[in-house]
Image 1 (cartoon, rainbow, N blue to C red):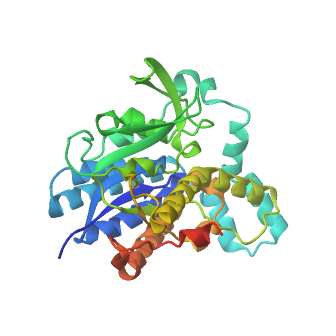
Image 2 (image 1 turned 90 degrees about the horizontal axis):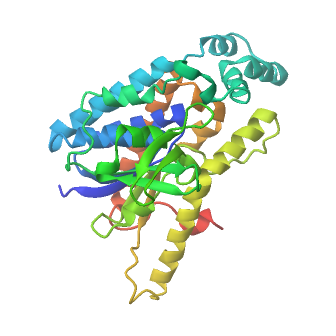
Length: 349
């Protein structure tokens, strides 16, 4: 069977990034899928780095098994960073009226964490501060990122000084670059990295503010047309948010989807120009867009749960991602190389 080459675009979303873990595990089981390039942001950068470093170990089963080992290692260690047993026990034991459920949200570890971030800065911790993601990445079973083998890897972070996106590529993708991409400024200190273009040592925050994920690095002429986006943040919510938590959750989703929607709108515009044959003398790539998502699951979760990677949530997300990828492979994979699986005009109508 001829390999179907794809590019992966992995959204960030904290603990919800375990959804992409399940997606990637299912894709790795399909020998007909060849991953040519990966663009990842935040949790998507963690997943992308684990995947790329594993696949660089060798062709076929060797690289795929190494990638699975890396992904399993990362998420098993992320799950040890937090737990939320008390609130899960309360919700499972008692049918709660809306008001009491809101009270448990206020008293949950998520609420405590969000409240503390409004009072304390990561810079207040002094010598007790540490970023746990760096050691996890460095101690993956297959940690080498810059081998010149495997899929091209792009990781996005936000420059704190000018607010612009910086895409780290090839030898620039280091543990620091990945932790910068996943640096929520209320939880972690900015990650400082030298920028050869500016000649300055720049500070970086989470890439989700400027590119979640960045699609444009995947438009290179040598890469395939197909871009498979693994969505973490829901694109649509039909129910009007009314409680303080619901309102804040929707603000979070809109903010972290804004850059992706801008790029998809630009792709849709280029597609119209191609259809109207107005690009005869302009080498603009006609990208094919596909999405793997589970908006039903994502809309049932609060944005705050992204901050608490408890094992039960990660397991649920992983299983949902695996099933979503399986549905894609059985239903939309035949579109690869031929047509979009996403109706972009309908998305913007």
